[in-house]
Image (tube, rainbow, N blue to C red):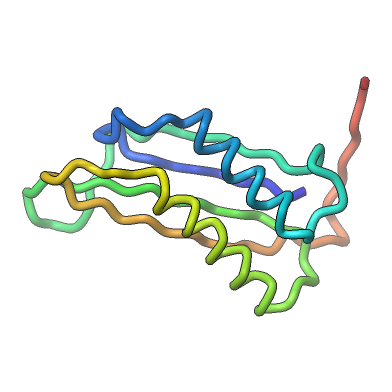
Length: 121
């Protein structure tokens, strides 16, 4: 725990997804909220089919969803959200002809029902 899901639109070809995931994991590890960097898992999904609003102009987005075990305060969640948003903003520069939205969502996972097993090394 935590689980970070990144969805991004296909019209961001300059986005280095592997580097982005590494930066997010490093930011989460540096937050001091997680006991072991091994517990931080991230993944990315490129969206080939998407729509932003109703105008025909070229638009894009990156949406981070961070799932955490329940029990953290609203203040801690806000700090994690701001930390990840700062990392998102540093992934640019973004194409000048493209409107890009960056957002972070924090979600609680019920601690009582979460199960995990770590196998191997």
